[in-house]
Image (cartoon, rainbow, N blue to C red):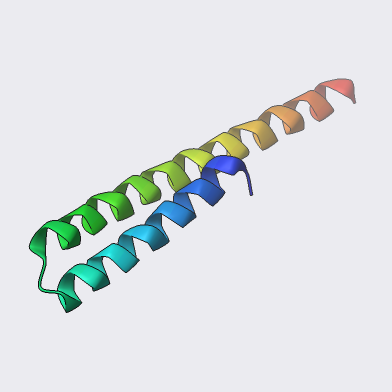
Length: 67
């Protein structure tokens, strides 16, 4: 797991907490901020996974060339 994945997961959790707080306090603005934070976290997590997989593919190509 890389930094982008960790930060993305943290943002996603923060978003879910904001959504719950917005729902409990009947604050639609806070709920909507939570939805946006969760979406941003999911996106950052996906970017991190893509980076990790591309890095792994490059390592595999390098290993295959050395053989």
